[in-house]
Image (cartoon, rainbow, N blue to C red; front, side):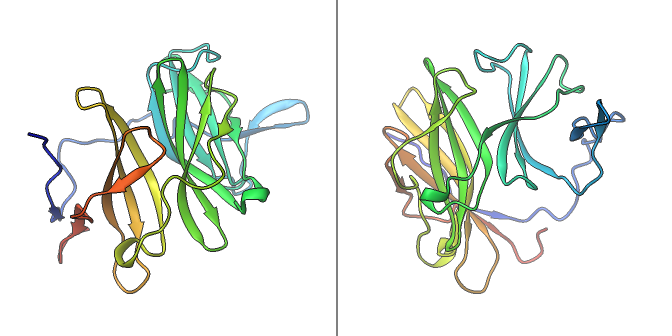
Length: 219
């Protein structure tokens, strides 16, 4: 019998007591070459949505890879590290494709599937956000799969768009599993949805979506 994710209502009202911030933060700082020297940038450049891969791409020379969004460049980038604290300068992996109507790409989730690196990411257009897929044979040079997003906006609770893909492979069931953020087309806050796929391209939403919603007193 298959086990499916239960419906959950978030009700956390305080910060977990066992979490603390590293004294070395921030561990990644955007830099740029000024007067021939690499210096930290203070020109409003932002990084967000980090995703760590401890088994990085073939072209990555260090043991840790961090995929992230470069908000000012509207692109997805990669930084490398030996220890998870000191990171290299970002290398852009994926930029918006105007022919697909993309104005920004962000929030990547990268999974190695045999000899292929698969990247699900948020593709923003003038009509909202959707989740698209790109693939790479070396983890550095990505080619988009298909001509359309693999998961588009739905109706109601995720009617304004979908973003923040978190994808994992369930080898025992031969299934790809995705948790994602749904943006409502009316009043109300965002919520978490769940979908499954046999190939990572064609996805079926769970009938009980959203599977995680905010409670009345939750942060």
